[in-house]
Amino acid sequence: MIWVWRGLAAFAALLVVVGIGVAAATGPTSSAPLLATSPTGDPDPAATGPDASAQPLPTGSAQSSPAASVFVPIEERPVAVFLGDSITRGATLDTTWGDVTEWSWFYRLLDDTDGVVQYGGMVAENGMTTSWMAGQAYNALALSPDILVVHGGTNDVSGEVDPAYVIGNLQQIKDAADSVGVPMAVCTIPPRADPAADARALAVNAAIREWAAAEGVILLDTGEPLRDPLGGWRSGYTNDGLHPTPEAAVLMARAAAEALRGIPLGV
Picture (tube, rainbow, N blue to C red):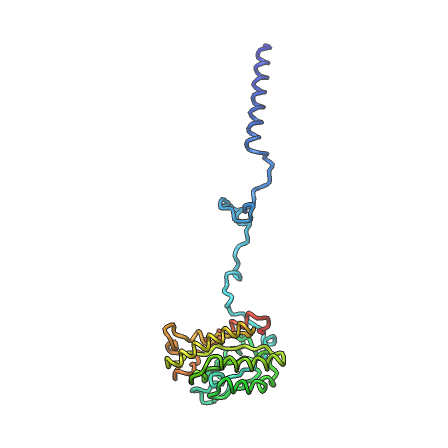
């Protein structure tokens, strides 16, 4: 009988040894659950179960385009005064010649839902160049805008103009705006049907972009949506090779609104 008890004791001892070995190989059963990320913070490729959802999921707002239209309450919109030429004035095929209508490039910037500015007035005349606008800067600023929006250069490129001349005039306007603490926004100009004039328009726009970036001027790239990649206007966006149609003006306003929405309260 004593041999039976000795045999059972030996068997029990063997079980204890085996159990210790298993525990050492597998670790304690009370260990913390594995995280869904690796120690470096990068997603663990092996985490395919429910724990993997511990990482933040993309939301609708995160996936939406920064250019998406965001409603700005009218009372919070800055007051804009527009300085420019016939494209600003809307003087093309429109018989009202100067009223703010769909022919004015900025018309949709004032829209009740998608707009981002309030209308504070315009100083614009047909056929005027940036030198005229520089001379009118203080008249525009006298209207007490929160932001001065300048669209000029189209008539400059009708002649053999040096882009530096346009930039010099824009700098005068900026200096005037700076003197009264009003931020300035500058537009790029539309294409031209005439290839030589269109080449000058491209050169002026390149100079405007460079100058705006260097001077901290708000760039409204209103000319780019109208441009055919092969040169000149996109089909259907001008009736005379010089002025935008109302449909083209919508694209100009949208480009401007996209830039202004990225700035607190528009300015």
